[in-house]
Length: 376
Image 1: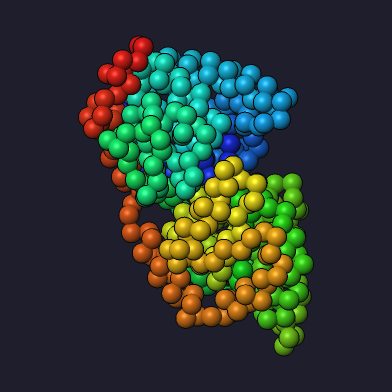
Image 2: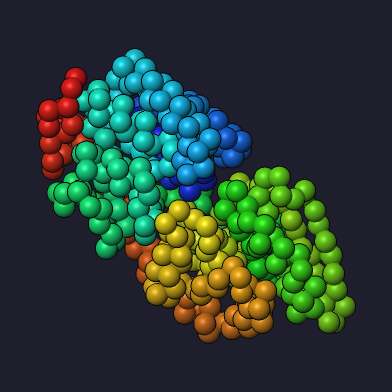
């Protein structure tokens, strides 16, 4: 048995793959501790994983605004002290970071203590933590075709984002019935990521009557604090009731994606990995203020691979007709699904599990931090 410390909090895109990896390691008999942030979104996401061990750590995200930058620096120092205590008391064999503001202090603490560090980046544009700490890591997992300056080829493995085991495609009719939707009607699901997306919520509310006229149901995950649970019913052209459901949060992503004929969504790497796993075509609307514009890079790659379409946030209101046309274009939807099936051929989780076990046993292809001269 080996011990792993996984830092993965802050957003669903960081936490979900951390949970997936932790479940895989625990199933193989290893001991795992997950470091998460103090944000409410983390508390919501971990509620159903009682058999995993989570620890909340201090820390806030980076900002160029002077006061927030000072707060970030102070909180990261507190987080580093926290991580050093955890590593010295629990003595993990490997520290794993999934990016974001929780990963930097964990990775740095691992480096200081001479513990091998593995970092995972799922976005097509690597984040600050990966760019800064990647050159010092034993292993860096990156999307296919992506490189990070200073990271040796021998340290790099190309891997997708591990998806939680419960997120699998199920029969659409059963998924609709579980969610309270009519299996006989089309379904559009709107996802704004773990934080929600006001622009997509507004589009969903303003365009539902248009969708309802064509017998298209709507399920919108609006984000914490952005909507109360609500059900709206309108009539189709033939007078049949058509439902729209708005919820602030959902932990039933497998059912949601299985019920959907089409998803309208932000373009976070976690969401895209789940779309691929459940073979759901999507209209991706990248968040225009994402760090280094990484969501646009993610969305463009998804579109080039044939998984769906990309629409700019400023133009989403003008593309309702395209959404309507796409929902009823069975030939094109089948084409998209076939491409998504092709994109999901590799098992990212199994690759990472085997590789991390090798690192924990001192069998990595490159020297560990301790062997490279890091202080013990």
